[in-house]
Length: 333
Ligand code: NAD
Ligand code: WQD
Image (cartoon, protein in one colour):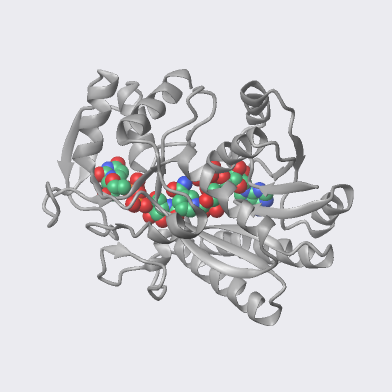
């Protein structure tokens, strides 16, 4: 009896694997290492004392994936594997649609053939699109997505809904993440993107370590608390624990399709992040204010009530924890 984690050597996947192992779960990882390193398997061992079973494969390889199900008794799947860089998705839409959609379709088919019908899917707040509301609640319609990456998330949610309509013996949990940052307190695993980062926290980490000269703050003339963009940042370890709650729900219940926001419910500005990072780590993050970034929304955050009520999950870590742990990881990498 094991939980299959696709994309389990990635940023959120690796933290989730640690939480699962620490709760005594058996885990099998599949990952093609397109955006992560095999070293993560060793880091997971250093943190948990367990060597996790790992398959280096692309989830679009149906035969190889089927073999994983034949060799292990997989009871649930947590599906992280996918490409996630928004600007890259605009440049390479076919690659993104192929990897994210084909990967998910092959996975679902192999699951069905092996009579494993319980899945947790990594979705994103991006599926709310640009609909004018600031506090996103799960009862809202999915909005119009603004890039191929976001569209793959919206389409996969649609696919899962259609699948459930066709066969209500499936148990499906769709988790919509807000902005995950931070790292494991060991400093061994965290977010370390290749090349120049697009996301705020990895960029701050590179500036703090002197690898990049200064941060560009994309606009200070939004109608927000201090003019800079506001998001709902969530510590990756809190996020990982949300997956454990989703798995526990699937273990308890036979079937159903449920959608949950995983966020703190609070909005935080770019300047608040910079100031907190500087004060908890006693390090300067030089920055300049530049033009708004095309496609950015001024402000959004989660309505986090549903996950609290139904999954008994809420965030525990503070912005200080996120900034301290992110820097603790970055210093070592
Ligand atoms: P990540 O890139 O660190 O992890 C994804 C992992 O999937 C990587 O290890 C990569 O090698 C693997 N992978 C990609 N395509 C694969 C394939 N075809 N076969 C096998 N493995 C494959 O990303 P992450 O930040 O850990 O995100 C995990 C999931 O959460 C993704 O689906 C992402 O879209 C989603 N998500 C991320 C964020 C975020 O801000 N990080 C926000 C919302 C949703
Ligand atoms: C956060 C804030 C920027 C970089 C993206 C995806 C989304 C999701 C998470 C997966 C914004 C500002 C940023 C910088 C800055 N991924 N910023 N200078 O845009 O909220 O979400 O990642 O699903 O789909 O769109 O995250 O970290 O890029 O930006 O001022 O160098 O920081 O304007 O206000 P975003 P982000």
